[in-house]
Length: 428
RNA sequence: GGAGGGGUGACGGAGCGGCCGAACGUGGCGGUCUUGAAAACCGCAGGGUCGCAAGGCCCCGUGGGUUCGAAUCCCACCCCCUCCGCCA
Image (cartoon, rainbow, N blue to C red; front, side, top):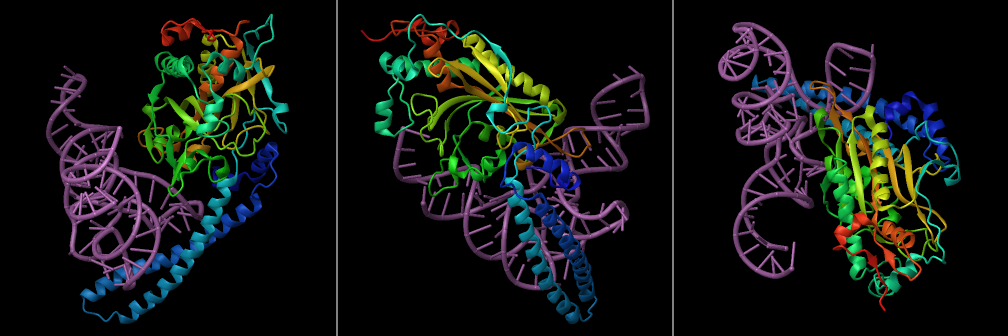
């Protein structure tokens, strides 16, 4: 959510920044400012009346003790009360309209990111590693996995439906190994605190991080409850400190969490239909930071590096891309995607998305800190990034480490987590 | 799921329907004292919002209601605790 006061003082900048995103259908800033003025006008009126009522009510108390007749004053206040009630309702209605509009407005893109309509304008920042050259025809992971007996999409479809995966044996263990490896790296070497949150959150949390109210159709909701399946650990973990005022010396807070993630994938029919790339349920290790505003862009760079470290240790080739204004997510001011080399796609595929949300989420969720002992609370900046999407990582491992006979080598760093296993062998 | 108890400021804990945004204690901040520290003593300290300001309005789990006036009364919901039932 943007700061209404800031919009009021910088309407042109707001419009210009939003225009970079190229969205039509944005709530009109003029309309918003009109409502804002309406609200302040109503407040001035109603608060003056309340002040008067408060004064007279106190007089009534005193006068009655003194034995005076207060019937006429009480009658007058009774009537004033009705006027106030009507005005209060108007205020509430206007505030609801303002809130509704503010919740629909995306974050303003940071000035450092490229301007463009979509992903074609994204800017490659750097590459790491070399895509493997195969002396044979490499297979996609959705063929390798089932042949190795470690992935089973047919049975997943039987017990649930399309876009679900089932892991067998060494595959299940490999998934678990990746999760443990990532968590250990981030907690032991990058200074993050491990969190294991609920996978269901309430609506307020979903609004806090910006998934709702705008993207209701992308979420799974538990019927008859106020609970949603989390689409990412970002939601429960960022909201950990919702409504709190943190002490300055608590910052920065750095959390890492493994969770399953659930996405309805509405509107992606026909895309990435095979394998582990786009499923309704997938595992992810997430990195979340709550930081002082003036440090948030340094923190974004180090967040990206923490995610990159996972790919480097796994020896997976990747590149870093800065998203253009048109490709930016709703809540983000700046996002770097990490894209891993995926032989079956013949290109780099997103495996991590690292964003600075500045105060956008903090304002929605009410996450503040006190810069100095006596100072007014300010909103923190929030950041998060995948570190990494586990299913896609497993897919990338299978594909990049495959050998001609259909076996797959296991990277050194994972072997301790795999009981020393060095190669996944297809059954004879 | 059933029965009972409770939600007040960083924490603990008071609070006759008006004098309560809230006693008191702890903790915090500033000061006095001290070579320094501790102790003691004095003082300062919630959040939001409107306003150029003076100042006003709102907030005692959340939302309604009663009343001239509600932290205090009524209703609903949420959360926590205890007991019973069920259960991984």
